Amino acid sequence: MVKKFYLLLLASIVWLIAGFNVLKIGLETYPGYVTILNGFLSLVVFLVFWLLIFSKLAAKHTSRIVNYKEERQFFLKFFDVKSFIIMAVMIIGGVTIRAFNLLPDRFIAFFYTGLGAALFLAGILFGINFFKAIKEKGK
Image 1 (tube, rainbow, N blue to C red):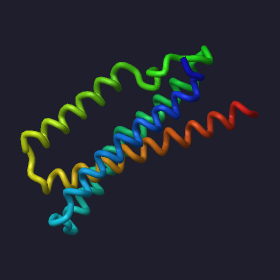
Image 2: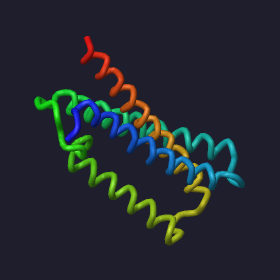
Image 3: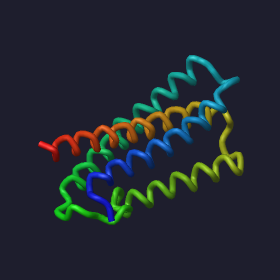
């Protein structure tokens, strides 16, 4: 059991690690595929995932965590079941795509770079929300 606000810190750490790893794969694959088009595609992937999914997800989970009635929560409650399933599907899908070479490296380069950056930014947002929650609690 942890204090509920530390769930935001745990979420931040998980998303930062996931984002870093996905971004790293994308950037390591990028040499040889650096073009204006691929840079643009990375930006589009980033914007789609950030604006339509991860920024909303971070806000939803932050609100849920902050509004828990009990101060202490089970440490895995930084996500709900649906989010754990989504993360598992994304991990399994990503590993499968790379293990069986289902998509060309060009795609991995621009897609993983955009996706990883959006995931990493979600981790930063959870961290910011953690510090905001701690600051508010102290008032």
